[in-house]
Image 1 (cartoon, rainbow, N blue to C red):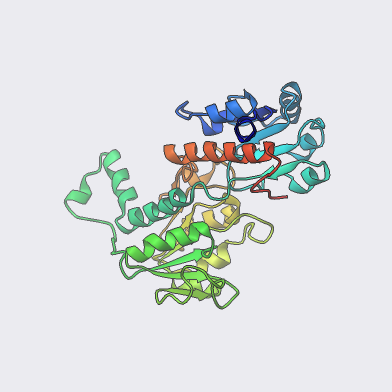
Image 2: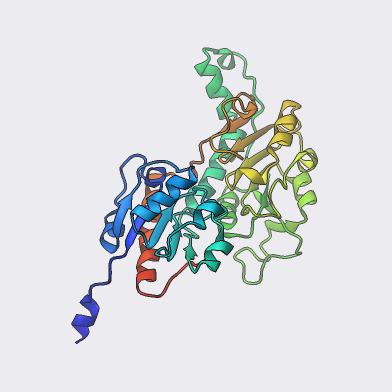
Amino acid sequence: AMATAATRVLRRPAAVFLNASRLNYDNCLDLSRISSLTNLTSNNVDSVADVEEIVSKVTESQAEIVITKEMEIPKSALAQFPPTVKLLCEAGTGYNNIPIALARERGITVCNIPTYSTESVAHMVITYIMNFSAAMFPQARMIYDGNQENFRVFQHPINEITGKTLGLIGGSGTIGTAVTDVALALGMQVVISSRRESLPAGHKYENHPKVVIHPLDEMLKMSDFVSINCPLNDETRKSIGRREIELMKPTAFLINTARGAIINEKELIECMKENVIAGAGLDTQEVEPPVPDSELWTLPNVFLTPHIGWRRLETRQRLVDMTADNIESYIQNKPTNVVN
């Protein structure tokens, strides 16, 4: 009897991945587990912006499960989802692009993948710190421009990382903790901004001699590098603007690997034009990609990457596998990582 229970075939609900190419843009990922768990329709595009198209893709596939990756699901689209839809899988961590309250009203479970890219994003922060400290970006740019002056008279301020202070916004979370792991190994001091006076009880770095807590303003004044690692919500949206940037040291660097809209981009651009701080490294921008005429592209002290924190090959495969885990749990009536 036990064998039959164990081998009992789970039902295979219909599923649609609305923007599969956002995740599998190089066709190097193995989606076979999701395909075996569900009757899967893959829509191989980076994003679907049109409400009608979103609704028709969901309706045509008769999907019970809708999978998206960092794609906006407007309320007007979700409102027209057929009643067959029961699960909305965000194949990522941030779910600010999904109207979760409306989903709850409609009886749709929303789940995400909380921790697939922790090390990858944390190492992205460290990559920016290392590049900034050795002025790698401007040096590379000079060589590409055919300018060899640096090899005769060196022109960039470069500094040791050891002994420098790294300030973290959202530093007590999973990714902030992984950034702290590496920063401490590099001999840095870590300052986590918080209104509370201590880290949550039981936190890995509670009472650590090189990890201190300060209010945001104090942290900004002390830090040589400031990294944003908090989620985007109503409280954090545009929370880092001119007032905050002007508190930073003129030699300091700002790094954002979280969500672009946490920074007030217009104010950041003005500050960078005035050289208020030494540089900014933005793996995320308010609009991704930034509009073609955005000044972010051309500012010599702003460095952009196309939201690659999660894009490393192994990170994306882990994301696919964990999405399959979420789907399997749902099919077994034990949904996991539910956010609504």
